[in-house]
Picture 1 (cartoon, rainbow over the protein chains, first blue to last red):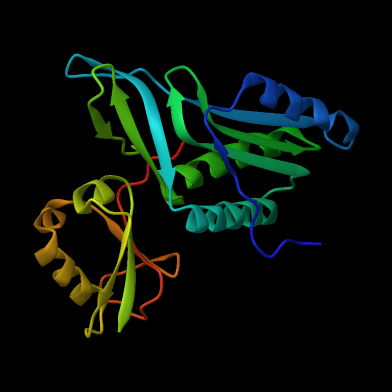
Picture 2 (tube, chains in turn blue, purple; picture 1 turned 180 degrees about the horizontal axis):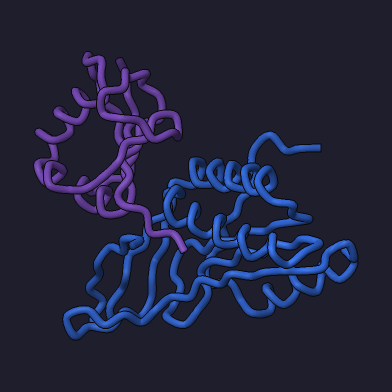
Length: 147
Length: 77
């Protein structure tokens, strides 16, 4: 049965390595899977005008973003022979070096997961209304723009 | 028409609010933007897209008055 309202992709704060490891572990019972592929987005300590980014504070138009994530999911299952797929994105503060995006795709065969993962990550970057405030060490900030 | 406008990211920083309600008699998104430009002049030089009912729309789209959002450049991931 399908939920009417798409389930939320957002998690408050960084995505921990425990959470990621546990997600992998949970797939051991799904033995039709022959290949997983994982993308982890990590907050980079960019240096801009001699100031270092220490964290990104994420906000989103959550209803629209969750709908977009839902659409991305549907189109990925249409395009690729996937067994399962999971997306998690942080909201709130994520420090440099921490993980803010976790995309996990699984399929019987490896070629599919390489293609699917790139497709999904690119669409997330381009189409989902998430906003990032890059916080510098002196507590000033600038707004991140995906390139 | 009674319109609720939502602001995000650097747009919310400029308007100093996350949403507001307006009485508006125009027909198009572009007309609503003119009103907002006169209220928040810095919006004229700010890059943003408009969503109506959670879908991105062109500025020439007819206004239905539901869920208007001004969205600055996306930065997910």
